[in-house]
Length: 458
Image (cartoon, rainbow, N blue to C red):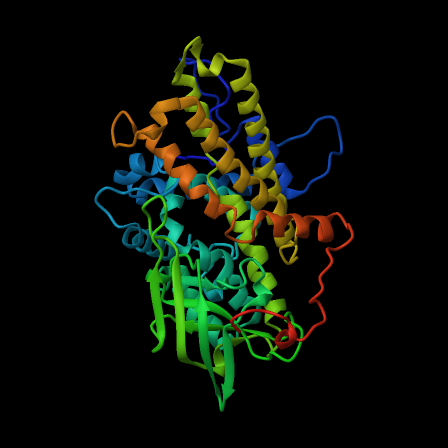
């Protein structure tokens, strides 16, 4: 029943058995060891689950086996490239049902505190759960932003009333959240945003526009960062709020993407009233609050993004080139080996981040590494697959052309993954300056009041 995320097809010749990284394997035990952060103390090392971890794994496995919607297993197993396709179901409806069932079984947001709908689980228990949940974890896609980004921000900066009111509903699937950060004039420069929030009595009145908001068309609530003081430098005049997406004056316009999907949206605010009780953090401290959201976002994207590595191995094991199977070509094997190494590095980098969180540390800038590498891999693998297919790469379909259609969707989706959560350039700057300690970029507007920065259309 278990479907471990690390269970990838290794480089092999067609017809030979797949090598897995399931529970109990040496690679799996090494993964668990890396999360625990234990140190080598002797030449004899035991990487097995502890008795408590083994019991937790068995409990999780039995629960998934008894409750998972097995009728969706085949479709979910084929949906790791690009969008999740369900022929007869809506992913939001199915996702809500699965999230509710997990919540009732005490398996939703299990690393959250119990009073907010979680289980107080340890980081290693979270990893074990994700391994045992397997492909059914894809059903939680509508909740990834809420669970991975919005929830932790509300938990860190919201009032106790807000936390008890919203977090359990987020964990149970009753509420879906989105993140209202990016703007047309600012791009990845979040601090350059123009959306204004003006204080009027006990409320704030918001006017402006956001763009590229994932899931806004089906979200109930959203995190909103707005400019509350244009007379100070751009990073110092921001404030964070959360709001009901059904509030008067909120308009959501889906964006039609190149791959035919509509995952992103434009969101317009016209005299939207937000109570001051929905403010997160102090007035003018929105940038500091946003760092919690952004770092969680990059960790979430980097750890969850399907890079297509297992599918690429499978594809090359069956693709016939002019001189034989693609998997037998030295150049192809070299590419696959490189991606396999990067995929492994992404996984263990994610585990190290989880280990840091278990110590109470805030997600750090090193999480930008995972997001940067996974985004580039996604595009590189799709491009190479299309090159190997040649003219067949233009085909799409539901039968024998499924693979071609999957990689085509992956290629069309990949540019957005290199923008979401910060562009490659932004992430490289963060890694260079905050991880490697290199000199910072020259920023001529760093100490200039926002309303004094030259710009068009303000």
